[in-house]
Length: 419
Ligand code: 3PG
Image 1 (cartoon, rainbow, N blue to C red):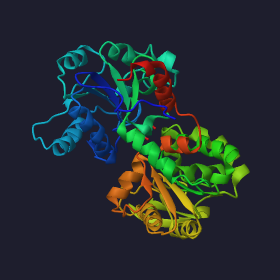
Image 2 (cartoon, rainbow, N blue to C red):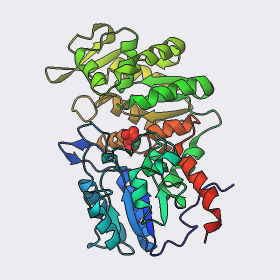
Image 3 (tube, protein in one colour):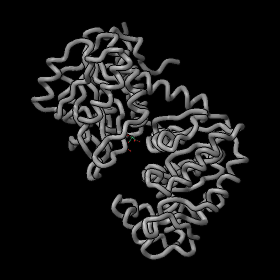
Image 4 (cartoon, rainbow, N blue to C red):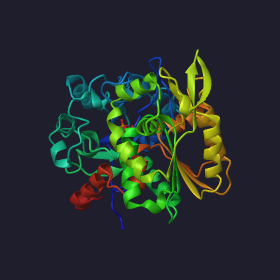
């Protein structure tokens, strides 16, 4: 049964269409590093250009307080270059305005012609954007009130943010018809195909966004224990569990958890480990930075001032021996700081190992994982690479996703408007 509007349902010619995409990227030395998300969303944008819509793009970069919480000016240039190629038109430009709901944005929106595209600035610059609120509450948020004056349709193209109940994701549900974008549609269809009746039995989890992971693990263990046989931990997830078990992880590693506001997860981590210690696999050794170099060390001997930057070789072998017997695996997040020379080993060896296993279904999620695959030149022999991270885990856990719920609500409300 159909649950969402698709881009085939309406005539979008000359219509104002707001599109929520996800361009959230790594930023190194103030430079935005292009990633798979730009390529994928360009396909939806190209379709809208060819349909002669007036396209207003909404996107975010990072979170308030983070060093990479920057404007989207560079993102617009990266996207323009991809679209130039797709459209085979050297003169094509994505217009960018360093404003979201002010006079400058309003002028640019009014000037927009059919087939043109305007990217507004980082929507998370707005105070009331990234607060978890209901559709009804977000109807009143500044972005929704402002854009409602202009837009005819709203397209949600970013599966990767659909687990957030933010204004730019759910706020338009009852205001204009909400349409599922091609990228979001493809993500959901591909993930559904990959899911076996048994679910995912090994979860290789790392990266830095562990505030997304810990509640999902809790939910999975309680509600779908059959699809979570082994959790192989790396990255900050391994650090918080090691800390919860009473190991020294080094002051510099602890500082990172504190700065990111993750130390508060320690009680939940303790509780989880206590209940599920048979399923949760932790490193036996780690790689720390020592005089600027990689030094591997057992978890019993981590020095007080250490900074853990990767899992160690024994742990890599232990994880491989578990993965060898798995039917399916989800990968979310790198095992360490792969961007730093000498600390790519855990991520590279395990990702490569999984890519080369013949009889395993592998689902990769998260912006960082995709970047690691590109930078480390891992063969893309995975069953599916999703551009969603936290969103993918939420989806797999069966939790309701506000973005998907908004699309459903809008479908019911505007069904009589279909062309
Ligand atoms: C991501 O990179 O996974 C998405 O852009 C969501 O970002 P968030 O976790 O900051 O909401």
